[in-house]
Image (tube, rainbow, N blue to C red; front, side):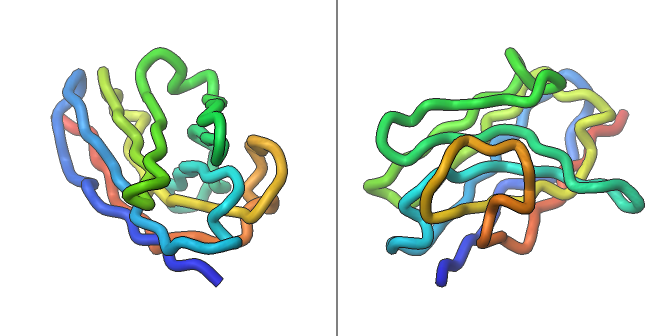
Length: 124
């Protein structure tokens, strides 16, 4: 079992930045890759970025590559998503996800544990 809690969502104008954080409980459930997904009403959940546990290898969706940066601090039991040059199409609820093992999967069904989500709104 794992508890994941997102924070840092909010509303900003296009071109600005936001940083999301996800605090997670320590244990086998969070010993593997962790990821950020996002979802807007009426659409399927979309992969954003993932980070491995030990080497902190990363993987990004093409739509956020070079704008978003995922990081992980296993000493503080957090992962973060630094989002720069935000666009209106980045508006969504962002979810933190974890699984005990495996690859940096972009598919949500591969992740077993989820946070409740944090709303990010980009609007002028």
